Every structure is written in structure tokens, then in C-alpha cells.
Image 1 (cartoon, one colour):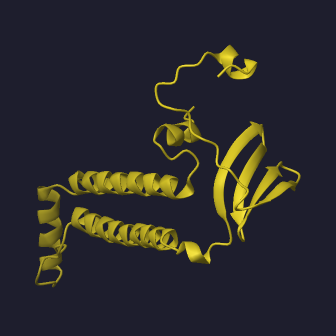
Image 2 (cartoon, helix red, strand yellow):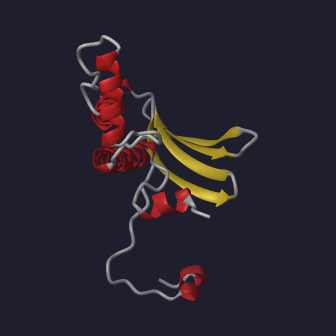
Image 3 (cartoon, helix red, strand yellow):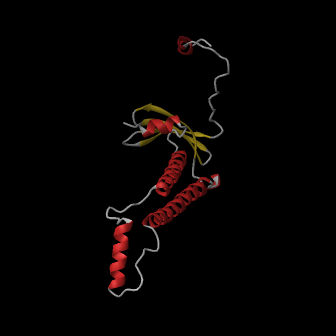
Length: 182
């Protein structure tokens, strides 16, 4: 079975809905183009298509019955199918372009309009996280579980110290990290 969540995380989307939407829109466009190419190559032949001799007999009977012109179809059924498919393709592409434009427009919302800024998060267990948010010149440390959201601590922005990233090339053993050795 296909695990779409794993595919998205490997593709770099990693839970970001806008990246996932971009991937889905790109896949949709590719599938629509392939579908249109297949429809354009398809030949439509009705099950009861008369051969040339049968059609001539029908035309001669119509002429003898008083109809002066034989009846011929003006266009082939396959061209009608392609035109319907092309119309459907154009409509679906317009819808996809609208979704893409809407997602880009939503993405460019100014940070001034946001109520908070996420500074970090850590997954503690299944469904449990710790999030660090900057709200109104304060830094909030929050515990999030499926049942509740709990404010663990609040710091003024000036007191909050960002953790220093590990230095490049620094090779420490696992035991040394917890034994107090630097």
C-alpha cells in the first residue's frame, strides 16, 4: 500500500500543508496532461458502425424514398470526444490555477498580521509536543496533547535565550553529552 505521508516527508513537504498542496497540484497537472494526450490518441469506433457497402445501400434507399440527399454526419464522434475532453481539461486547469493562486496569496500574508511567531517545537511522544511561541513580546512554552493545551512557562522576550546550535565538526560521544563532560 502506498504511504502518502512518507512520500511527502521524503519529498521535503514534511507536514507543511503549502508544500503538500504544491506537490498535489503538480501531480494533478501531470496527470491531466497525460489524460489529454491519451484522449487525443484514442480512436472512437461505435460498435454498430456500418461498413461502406451498408452505408451506400442506406443512402440509395433514402434517395429512392424521395430524400434527395444522402445523410452524412458532419463530424466524427472522435473529434467530439476530443473537444469535450479539451473543454474539461481547460476547466480543470483553471480550477488548479485558482487553487495555486489562492495558496500563494495566502502565503504572502504579512507577518504583522500574525498573532504569534513559532520559534520551535519538539515532539515528546505520540500526539504530545512542546511548542515555543513568541506572543506580544513574550515567549511562551506550551505543552500540547490531544486532550489539552497547557501553558508551561512564560518568559519576557529579553530573558529568553536561544539555544546555541552545535558547532560544526564537534564530535562528541553520546555518553559525554549526558555525563557533564564538555
